[in-house]
Image (cartoon, rainbow, N blue to C red; front, side, top):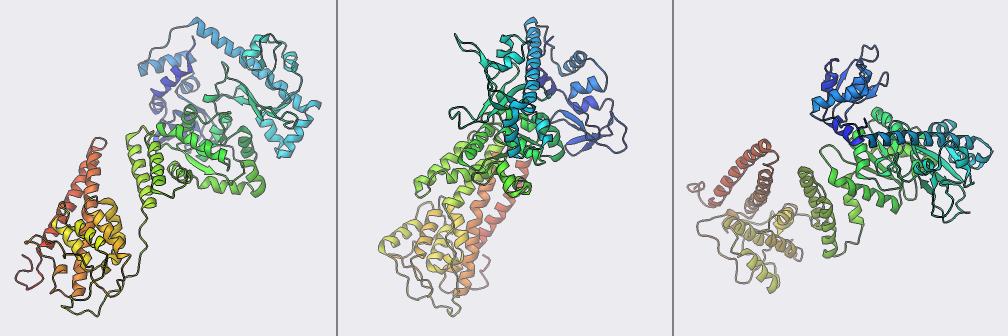
Length: 618
């Protein structure tokens, strides 16, 4: 009976590992995992951990490791198929019926494993022989230790086009071709795929050789030949579903809590040679969705560590593009960009392993990388350029499938774009005019052009303006020096409020053209528009001391700015109801109380009288 990898993955996904192990072993909750004293060896301090999310158990004492099927076979001694049938029954899955064709394919895969294992032994022997001297010299120049050479299984493929066929004569030609070791061309004799190359075996997660990669040794003599050559896809090898060195890096990642993704297998080996064992690499393609899922089974935020050139940056962005639709709570990518023109081996050689460790300790987030990449992707000199930046950013956001993550990315990138595209005006020094006396309201007016005066009047006289907003605008026209004092708050408010914001923006721009040192008001053609008769504001009353009027106006500005911020927060809390009803209701209640209190303060503020204690609270 042949069970497909997809079916077994589905079985594991439907099985809660802690429930299976908990039947015979007492587990204790430890954060997001469970721990226990290891059932495979005697110990007094728990070093056995079970991770339901990743679907495996691991003992840091005896290195026992496996999934639910492995637990039943190793701990309870069940045959493989009995373990599968028991788990399938509990998961409500039907075990596939025997398939003769699948059985034959499984037998063929076993035979192809024999081919790749024999080829690997032959390549390693060649490296140690006379023909491998050139390849050994290259490895010595790269600084790879003998231990690293043995661990990673370096070998050598000789130049002879028929050498592998003679060495693996026990296997028929069709098997050698199907394993990717030989190339067949119509009307020509098949020939060896790898020739005069430094060879590296590629393994599956069980550590079996399934393919090869070969690095050219005489690039100058063969300028048209690819620098690196990988096996083609075969029944054993799917390059989009395989990560180089994963079978070694996964145990190391469980110890360090990180997984590093580099561009090529020589980069992964260079890191291992320097003592960083948790590095993997894609195989000649951009990081695929399947490879990202493989990484997330090991750690929640793998670190992409690509070369510091334009090609490396593009590779990182391609990986980000693949990851965006897959993002889910807690799972993302981190990105390290190496110095320009350097790969990991270069950086380690020039500055030591500490230099790359320092970069790995402080990777950039996926969101930070998106922002910086798009901001540098094109000139941003005009409004159209900036609009293009926003469109590119929102295009990335639209790829995200998780609604909550999409909303958070949209908000964060919108905030960054707003801060970049609409920077706060430069803060200017505010000097209060303490020498003004009560009743000194008839000072000369600050002169603006008739056109600006007309624009300001229209801005204040808009039909949608409420009495309070009109009063604040009038107060700022009477005391334009207060625009400088409250410039930051007013700028933030103008960006948020589509109703009053344009008038505030116009006032701020006007103030930049005036000399405000003498405290003169702004003169509007035909005076100020009238306010509703029932409203009264001390900062507009000519009987109020100028300094007191300014403080009253400051409070009015504070109220004006706070109201739209609370209304916006209320709208966001309401929009979250479908995803988080309890949190949304609680947030709405809190904001509603603040809005009610604010509205009451606004009502009281509008009823204030500048004269007499009898009607001061009416």
